[in-house]
Length: 164
Image (cartoon, rainbow, N blue to C red):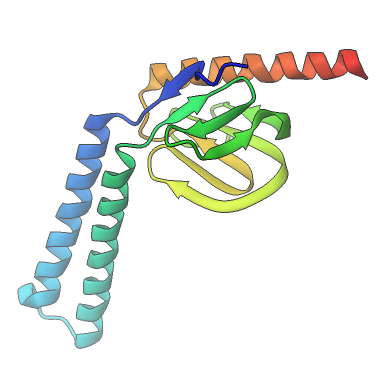
């Protein structure tokens, strides 16, 4: 079997830059207020400083995820770095409806087995037996990724139905 991916998905550079700028702006305003820009108690200053540092950490995480991507193979979804996100054989269902709890422009795959908690901002997340794909990814690319994923899952289900 070929190791070449069928399709790859990357976050939008524009959305990453905007997100980093917004988080950096929130951090700057929070730190300015915490440093004396307003009359606040010591506890309020400490809370603002902590929230500002959390915004900086979030901006850093989003910036790091800019180089990450997802690759759809016939048997799995993996990060472009090689780490497997999920095996298609473990997938039970794909949710992509309007009211599904999913990332923006994305999909959620429900798995048979629970996995470890993981999050790559704007690209994918995993909590328990659910994997969300999307967020800051372009809508058209994410739709093509989801369509091909849905097709692969349907083929696998049909194949397992024949073998039963």
